[in-house]
Image 1 (tube, rainbow, N blue to C red):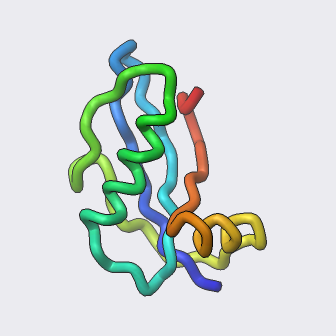
Image 2: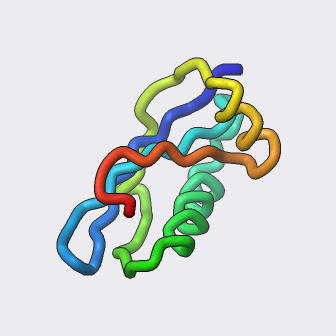
Length: 87
């Protein structure tokens, strides 16, 4: 399965900047739905963050998904790949 990688940077209220990727099916092009996946993920965090809009989240590239990524994309519609300051 090929996936679209949406590179995302969100300001935390403590000043740190979170970096994570929102991974979705490469056929999903509805940006607002992709942003909502990111907002849903942010709600799971124990700290407050800034907003998530097209300014913080941009399409980056197409990649091949791992089995774990595919399973979550099929189940939830997306997979989050945490990169920096996500915990």
